[in-house]
Amino acid sequence: MKIYFDHEKLDVYREAIAFCGWAGEVLATIGARAAVKDQLDRASTSIPLNIAEGNGKFSERDRARFLEIARGSALECAACLDVMVIRSWLPSESIAARKEQLSRIVQMLMGMLRKFSGRAEYLQEDEGDYSPRIDHEQEHEHDYEGGEKTE
Image: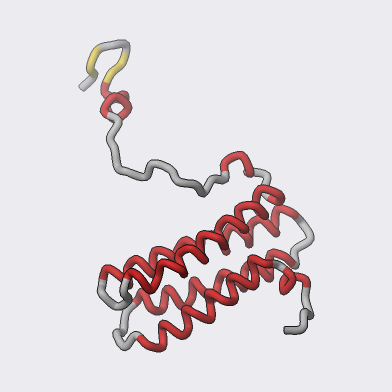
C-alpha cells in the first residue's frame, strides 16, 4: 500500500485499520439487531479516524486529545466484544486474538500519550486491581467528626 499521509506510517494506525476491517467482517455475519453491533461499528471506526486526525494536529494538547479519544474507543471495542460473547453471538475463542490486538493498540496509544499529554503521570493501562471493594473506613469517614459520630 502506497503511503500518502504521515498517519499511514504509524504502526498504531495500521493496527487500528486492521481491527476495523475485522470488525466489519464480523458484524456482517451477526444477524441480530443490537445496539452493541452499532457501537462496535462506530467505536472500531473511531480508532483510526481519531489517530489520523490527532496526528495531523500541530499542538501537543490537540494531538493528545484525539489520541485519548482513540484509546477510549479501543477500550470500548474490547467491552463490545465481551458483550457479544456473553450474549452468545461470538465464541470467546474467536475474540482472544482481537482483544490482544486492541491491547497492543492501547499500549501504543499510551506511549504516544505519554509523549504528548501534559497528564502523562496519570496515564496507566496495566493490570490493576479492578475488583470491587469497599473501604468501610473511607465510606463512613464523613459520618465522624473529631472521633464522634455525627447524625
